[in-house]
Image (tube, rainbow, N blue to C red; front, side, top):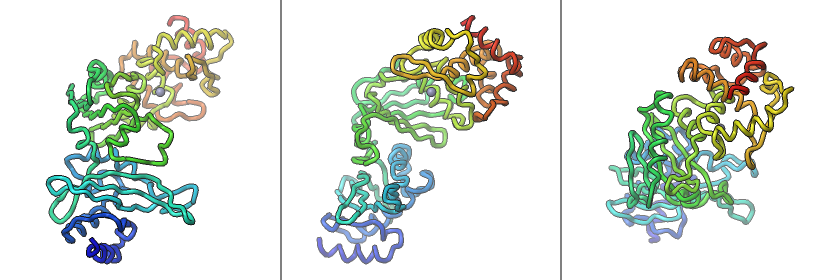
Length: 381
Ligand SMILES: [Zn+2]
């Protein structure tokens, strides 16, 4: 083994990018020194490019780019430490290179920072290196780790799961909002995982200090008309399905949620999907009992100064329910086209001038009539 080290370190001395990639001196590198050099050079290139746009990283294996983008997002800003005020506190170290079939390698890379005598681990990644001429391309091990899983296709959605799948939920994910949002042409790739811990391991993130103490999350990437989702929220069979979140997720496929009015977005999510497991009807009932029971309530003032009500342990903004009622009225009058217009008034601004202008054009009510009209909608609901 020893004969390889001088080669690696002389290479490291030459390459500006690779200087930061440390090679753990105890590891077994490929016996062919040229191959070892290509592997390390490519890996250094991949890590360097990991800080830019995913689609600009030419070291990603094209056939598994979506799966790899999920992992690649975890590399963003990986060297920076806010506590130590150092943009490059954590540095990558190659810790394992194990040969697989067809000239591939299983790599383990960890990011360490040094503080005095202590070495601090930020994250550890697994990557699969695939030979490609004089280079290597890299992929998340997700595809490999799930190669014995089952698959289910519905419309343009492709689900991967280990044992069983709630196909009714899978169908809803693919169809429920997409016709209205005109996004039926968007593809979905969904990996159904037990929890965050299992999901991270499948994806090739064996440790990240940022996620210590957590067991649930959903990771998504939108790229060129395809959305890939890793569900790590108690969702091995896609039983845990929330139409409220689905609304937000499907909307974000066609427009950035930062570009729409947040209260209208939430109003749609409440009306179409309830919230926190409560149906729209249950939420409306709680709203009437806790907020609309006060006959002195001024809905216009509420828009500037939010008030909240409870459903179980969850706090809901009363204004979102008012917006849901307005959305319902607009949809009855103009169909979803009207709702789309209402959403697209842009982000919230103080005073909500655009909100009231759009309401006037869609429902013919002025700012002065707003409070009375909302009371009427509540009474008729
Ligand atoms: Zn929401």
